[in-house]
Length: 417
Image (tube, rainbow, N blue to C red):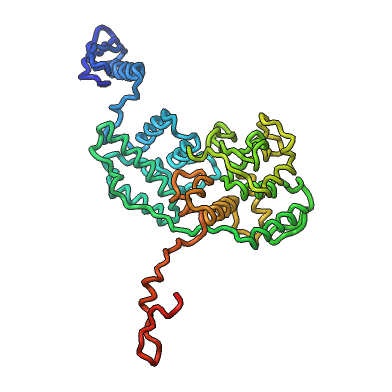
């Protein structure tokens, strides 16, 4: 279906040709189509154009376009087209995939950056076997770009899955490529000394004084007090940085005791669309309401929360123009305010500190709900800064005690665990 049979061509007059062929539609019916031209090749090409027009009119993208001889760049285009039809694919995710497929047209971009279309520009589908694809991913890893390799693995797996569905190959060659593992890092939260020291430094920075790594304020826009306010709210809510910048005045419930904050969106930037507030969080579990600690409530009171309209959708941390604040701009200002003494601390460190405190007192399951994660394993592995607690086994371990020196007598049970 969606293809034509042998094309026959008849010359009907001077510079007049008629080409005919049988076409099988997606309804299963076979119909005769024809094309006219001033030459034999022109008439035959017109028949092929008619076939393509019929395929499109039947709502298809010509599934027969994928064969074992299809070039990888063409397969990538078809995969992106299919992905655009998936309403569950986030715009920023689609943009991320497109940036790893398409070479950049920005003159400032590095010409040696690995993109799928440039790295496999002349490779046909049957040539992209498991060995070839595995070598491609290993090459990216060797250059120190593990996250990029993971992204390419996701893209190529999807592309090859499309080829399998179209019957161009029998099985997905990405199934057997090697695993891509990132170096595990221990979550690091702030202790009390670090929290107090950083807050004191933020106040010093806000006053315009010099801090380690950042000179004193002399000219330009005044230093932003929202850096300090956002730090308090990040610490009190455990929100993701993008979620914090998406907070609106109407998200604060001042009628509850204590006050509550609803986390319902995040800030994203998409090429061709710009910066906007996405009306949902990173995951379904991310839509949540958290109870605010006293210090966060005091910060909100200082911002005037007692007088806010419950329906006011004004951003809690607006940009200088009153719109949504760009996370990249916020990050740049944050790096200036933290200086070099606290260079390891990012806005996400506040989230880890919040979740670590909750887990220590109430357990990992409650920390999971505070974080907006689907399962507690993610919270424990990436956000809680504490070692796993082994159960008390001293009842049996005490029996391993050696005898008291010089007596030859067993000292089991007589020593402290």
